[in-house]
Length: 297
Image (tube, rainbow, N blue to C red):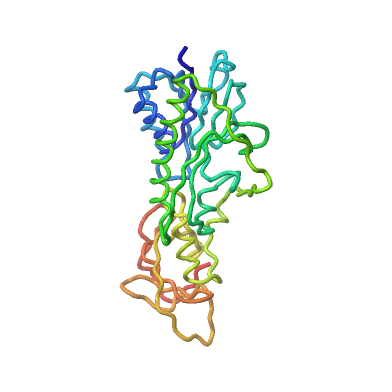
């Protein structure tokens, strides 16, 4: 008997899971698709996921409309991709794909946390939901080598390809009737990453220019982007370059010291940083600044 699968799909990763089912001819296994939305990213792919479902005649519903509509959940396997909400149904199995090489970076925001730490190898893990979050047995994983500097947008795209590859393997295993048991994690090696909010996107000008460029690269698109205050308005810094440092008798961090090609050069704790792509709260270009004598907070 073919398996019945419910897909919890959010973002590009959720879309990749659905495309994997198509690639290995497993669309008929999909019982229903629950589509998530995320206002914290530029494109949450919700409309694209819905279009995919409509084209392939899959039953779908948005997360906010999802209540008690899944019948006989104990007969169904759930797969969650990019999902960040609780799944309360008592499914036969829940397979979660997590953006880290577990047991490292359990919890929230694991990809950005790994990039901020400049991990040379990152990846994804498929696990069975069990007890506390991200602690269940591992049923599959994929690794990715990273060379820095790199932008999170590029990494996200490459990670999504890993989702596709791993999901193909999972669908093929389920279709062949294999039992997904999983290998227990080594809990003594567990680390955790915590959720990020607006304060965590704020630039700390006391850090070095090199560190800040890395930070800007790690929290950029598809996420909100590094932020600062400019004349009591929030701005987003999407790109920056290291500028040649000068000897300063008073290193007042956050102040503009030069304007080069209409781009402000900001004093950092160590070094100078030239801001090359900055937008205002509404996403419009904020350069050049209207005044020279300003301090970013």
